[in-house]
Length: 60
Image (cartoon, rainbow, N blue to C red):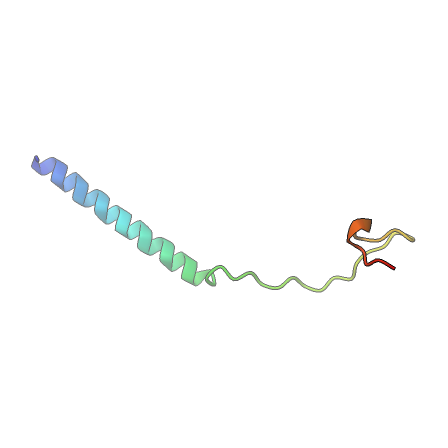
């Protein structure tokens, strides 16, 4: 292999390692994928119409 090819492969490997480390740092800083809880919101109604589809309501 020529020297230029070896240098290019080494540089590409270093870029890949740097990208993997950067991605790991971003995931850790972001809270490891945890989603904050949704704030409680009262269900809306429009007269007698429910805020959820009838199929998901509790049966009487």
